[in-house]
Length: 206
Image (cartoon, rainbow, N blue to C red):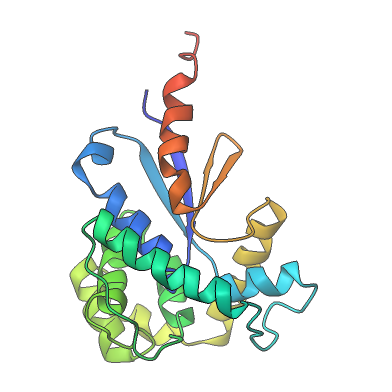
């Protein structure tokens, strides 16, 4: 039976990129679940976990062995899922404007906008904080171009921070995270477990 699934994501996460690709795949698309995409900032989530203010300066906490493992892991997953991937440029992209835009556009346009941004970042090595790149992504999603002027404003950043703080309060600590009927599944590698869990649920009583 189709379920409503919230997907918390940040464009900067390669695992969120894989999730976007997989959900559009034929096998998962046939499930007819409703996927509600919730943009959040991974930097804010990490700051909240460390007891820092939401917009505190970034602190890299990854040990070199873990970073090397993650890079190898991403390469393996890209091959497994046949998802083209190239190192982002700049190496640590600023995803905040794109996330702000994602929160502003209509929910039915958001999946196409997400795909456009993910492809710009992870396939074409484009700077997703650049206005011209984001304008192209809006066009591809059929969204209103004037939203671009709002995306770089302080009020939109504040909304992103508030949404991320709210998500953290719900138990979201990383991306991608799936929430279905208040049950949390963290990581792209839990997507299959999520679908298995939904299939096992008893049908709703009439």
